[in-house]
Length: 248
Image 1 (cartoon, helix red, strand yellow):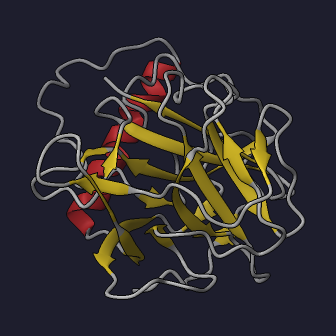
Image 2 (tube, one colour; image 1 turned 180 degrees about the vertical axis):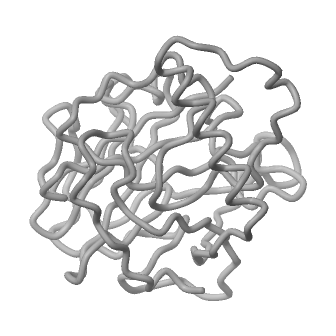
């Protein structure tokens, strides 16, 4: 289904790792034969700005970051979160200035993010005829309800994650199956290294997570998260974003 499903916000969430949005829906993507121009969920292409354009630049190099995609905000109002990642080291850092999750309209640009007032710039790509060739991609983002088996595996993984948060290791977990998809919206974040969670305080709420990829073979895009997954969080007023990635 297209990303038009409205999520319920749970008032019981007390921190960034709690279940805030429900239901948890898995992401899938499909190519577009034409530019996607509108306030819809997508990966790649150029942003559909909901306010004045603002393109983040890398703190280290000063070069424009790469636009990864846009993600509709929860709730009844039409809003968008825009994800950008640089080509420099340190993109895993929540506030390192090498990634940016921007919110429009009426959003706040994080204090550690610099940028330019420009509408277009570098966008998501996959590898072409060789490792260094870049072919731009633009993909619709859809949401899917996980089947019962996948949902049960996910809940088992969360038990293991919570144990790791508390400094415990569950016995005989070598045969614990991995989830089919680590790219989803809502629910709780599932970290590769849950014993070292990100240093993000209780004023933030988990929004979505997105797997990285090499951009070859069946990969629809290239996104360097060290073989891991990226995680997006929103402030409680949904005016500011944070992003980091985690891997094994």
